[in-house]
Amino acid sequence: MNDVTFLRATVRPTLDRGRPHLAVRDVAKKYDGHRAVDGVSFELAKGEFVTLLGDSGCGKTTLLRIVAGFAKPDGGQVLRGGQDVTNMPPAKRRMGFVFQSYALFPTKTVAENIGFALAGGHALRTRRIAELADMVEIGALLTRYPHELSGGQQQRVALARALASNPEVLLLDEPMSALDARIRVKLRNELRALVDRLGITTLYVTHDQEEALALSDRVAVMRNGRVDQIGTPAEVYHRPRSQFAAQFVGISNLIEGRVVTGGIDASGEFWPMAVPANVLPGAEVTAVYRPEHIALMAAGDGLKGHVDTATFLGANVRLTVRLASGRVVIADRPSHEASLWTRGLKVTLQPDAVRAVILASEPA
Image 1 (cartoon, helix red, strand yellow):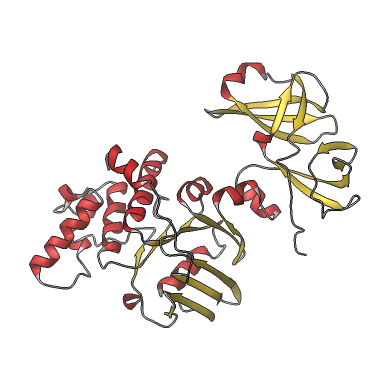
Image 2 (tube, one colour; image 1 turned 120 degrees about the horizontal axis):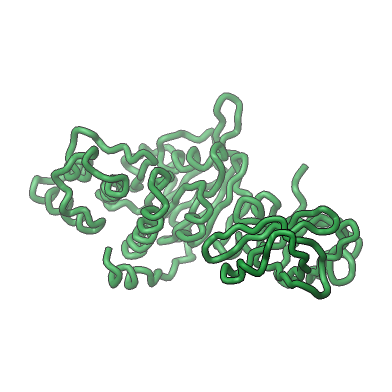
């Protein structure tokens, strides 16, 4: 995809927030007594891109397979456009599926893989295959076999095959997990631009938080078969609702303490915070401070400590600062300041009181 095409495609369509295009209602699934999916509910608007994000074993792939019809739920419903498709076979759901392994037929050419499920005469099928190949920019590869393709090319073939039947919903199960980092970034941009051009509702599974934040209109963070939090990438990152979400998406400093005037008393350390009005003084809370929201100075008022480590990360340098109490705090600074923050340097931390967030209490 050339730069002009990509820039044109990144103007994202307005989502229809009327009747949900895809709805998952209280879906549950057990395997050998283990709740793989535990009463999950969420909805996607037409044209929306939602990612299921979580560790291995959290239930995200099982849930995707239930939506696709490859696994039968023990309870709950899956609806597409208001139609209950829970017990409908996969071929009739009008959903395209891209497998993690791509699942290409090794003895068929690219053209034969793309057109495998296409109906119609030879001329019609040939034209449709060519259209799809051009759409994902593999028109020159139609006579090749899967073993002659790179990982990125195989992924494009799998995507074209999933789009062959004009599905209303596109489902993708970690399709970029086997690709190197540079190719992943390129292909995720192309994927998002393509689904925007097509206006296709998309449900995507990944364990890669950066991928989820970059691709999605909304992210559903999953834990133990449930959706822990669902929201826009900015909401999930800047306003995490649980300790799990705060630690799984991004890096966090979690501070436990008692609410006092202007902040939190954490065992004698004062952490400034704009405490919400509904949180009373004396309440025991856990707050999250992101590394980029902690300022460092060589002197001044604030939390005293010294630099333990400094890790160069390209755009940022990530510092671990050990406070007088022994607490280790992570702080990010622009990488052009890397030479300023040497190991052992005494520093003062000033956390951003406005951007800190109090987390909801964890269930017992």
